Amino acid sequence: MSSPNVPLRTLFVTSEFSGLAKAGGLAEVSAGLPLALRQRGVDVRVLMPAYPDVIARLSDITWSGRLPGRAAIPACQIGEALLPDGTFLCLIGEPSLYDRCGTPYCTPEGRDWPDNHIRFARLALAASEIARGRGVPGWRPDLVHVNDWPGGLTPAYMRWDGTDVPTVMTIHNIAYQGLCNAGQRNRLGIPDDAFRIDGVEFHGQVSFLKAGVYYATHVTTVSPTYAREITTERFGAGLHGLMQGIAEHGRLSGIINGIDESWDPGSDPYLPHHFAAEDLHGKQANADVVRTSMCLRPSKGPLFGIVSRLVHQKGLDLVAEAANNIVQQGGQIAILGLGDPEIEHMLSRTSRRHRDDIGILIGFNEPMERRIVAGSDFTLMPSRFEPCGLTQMQAQRYGALPIAHATGGLADTIDDGSTGFLFSDLTLDGLMAACSRAFDTFGNDEQLTAMRRTAMARRSGWASAAAEYETLYNRLCGRREVASPHRPPRRVARPAAVRDPEMDVAA
Ligand code: ADP
Ligand code: GLC
Image (cartoon, rainbow, N blue to C red):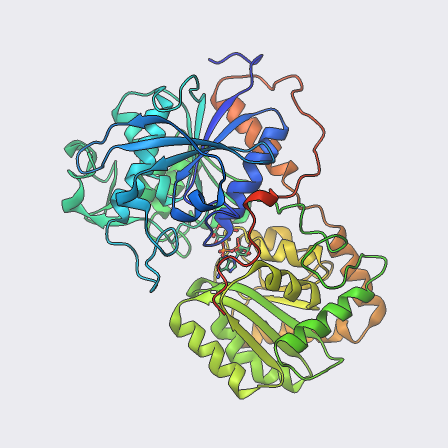
């Protein structure tokens, strides 16, 4: 049991970090949660691979440690860097694994790297070694917090090496499991007796996510509704049986994410026009900027925004079906996203059919993202499933009322009829019924303003999630609630030094 008088030391293991390497919401969580925990007095260090962008964007990295390899996993260096906001990063340096162009997971053409199992086993093994006091001089965690499949082998290596430090495994998306061929298991240093159903085996393959879930002390996911959903066959992606068992043993909980404080319509530097709940004039002006930049005709009708990874999960095929109807009713749609080429083509075709009313930018960049959200009256999120979702929280803060499928975190963070519109029936009729309610609201100034104000006032920072994780960490480490290392939250946006507004622009 660690002493409650010294700050709890936590190693936060991730494959993405906002401003350094981002493929989706995990990057935002990896930047936002550790910072909020730090503000509560938790000594968090974030462990991630040193991809080329990470090295390029950090001015000062001290390479101070070295860790051995295992089986086919090469040795690596450990670097340390301190961000301007006080976040402490531990970086895994191994050029043969990470010195490549592309996203954290894929080639520039969008194909998974064939050695991803080795790349992320290196991440997990480094976490496990640091948990035993190696690699980071003078620092050893009381708890290791692992995120998604890339970190999944961490609790497993720790168990096999006899490292008795509690672990939290957070599932951000159970659909991505990190599967690899069983023939790779010796190369990953997986003991033979762990390759079974009560271990890392999943239908004849090695599953990184299952390993994490199976060996972790506690499993969390990113909303209470998704925590229930993944115990069902419909949402559990084949792991529902395991999730049910874990839930029955009280080892599964759902904690809603937060969003960064820089999402503030009154001060966001990317917005051409600032606005506030009491004075929404700037919102209309932002809509006009979006229309002009996406070559849409001037209009007084509602603007529907979509900012998303363009993947099956997000249900945007329904938007393609609904587009005609939305345009006929006087609506326009602005889309920003990147992902599956088939979905990109489908939405591009839809846009070409309605050139003046539907605009699409294939790519991703934060200034455009924020302008679209700020200018939109409504945000479309017909996700098939949504573990948490950050976009609907960002949209509410900018008064862009979400129209969303009542699933996962969408159901937990949108108050139907008050801060947005939820629909349960994931069909064209279901979506259009919700859109009709939105059109009606748009035609009623008083109701529209009231809903926007309620949505914009909704609390969605990181403080509440950080408090819940801290309580969990303390319980797992056998510590009582620490009296009050809690410092009042500082208003800190993500660090300017690692921010590049033009990063990842592909449009
Ligand atoms: P998900 O993580 O499933 O994509 P979330 O709503 O949790 O969904 O997260 C959305 C976050 O991902 C937002 O912060 C947004 O900035 C970012 N994002 C959306 N689309 C892309 C993209 N194509 N590339 C990188 N980041 C993206
Ligand atoms: C995943 C989920 C998304 C969630 C994000 C951060 O990408 O798809 O719903 O918000 O992780 O937890």
